[in-house]
Length: 94
Length: 94
DNA sequence: GACACCTGTAAGAATTTACTGACACATGTC
DNA sequence: GACATGTGTCAGTAAATTCTTACAGGTGTC
Image (cartoon, rainbow over all chains, first blue to last red):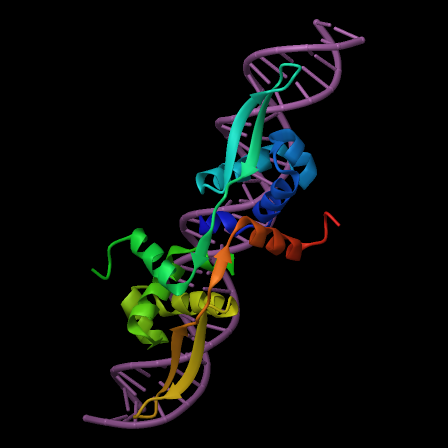
C-alpha cells in the first residue's frame, strides 16, 4: 500500500479522482494527461492497495464504462504502525 | 517520504531500530542482515525523509560511532492529505 | 607495521518499475 | 464497411532503484 502511494502519477490520479468524484478510464487518462495503458497499470496498483474502487457501468448509448473512485481510507502513520507492518514481511525477531 | 517507506528493508530497519532504541551503522547492518554500504544507502533515504535521526558519538576507546534512532512522526494518511501532497508536485489544476 | 574495529563514497551490475506502441474485442453512428 | 467511442492485455524498451564490490580514510591494540 505504501509503495502504491510512492509515485507522483498515482498521487495525481488520486487527486484528480477526488476532485472529479468519479471518472472512467479513458476520460481519466485525458484529465491526468497520461496514456490509457499507463493509467490502467496505475489504477491496477491503486486498486490492489485498496485505495480506489472500480465499478463497471453502461452508458446511455450502450458503451461499457469502468468508473473509478477513491476509497475511504485513514491510516495513522506512526513508528509503531510501521513496526507492525515490518513484522508482516517475514518472521525474524521472533 | 512515502517512497522512503515503500521498501521492505527500510521498514525492517525502522523496526529493528525501534526495538533496539538506537544503534550505529555497522552493528545495525549485522542486526538487520544486510551489507553495510547498502544499509548506509537506506539510512540516507530514511534520514532525508525525516524518519530517522543520526548522531555522531565517540565510544570509550575513541572509535567514532554514528548512532541512528527513529524520529517521532505521526501522519494521518487520508485522501484529503494526499490531494495536498499531489498539489505539491506541480501546478496543474489551478 | 599488521590487524581489529569504525566511518564514508563511488562505479558497475542486477533487478524492479515505469512507459510506449501494437494488438484484440465490443457497441453505436454515418 | 469505415469510423468513432469504450474496454482490456502483452511484448519490448527506457528509466529508476537496488545491491555488490572495491576503494579510501580514521583510531586503538598486539
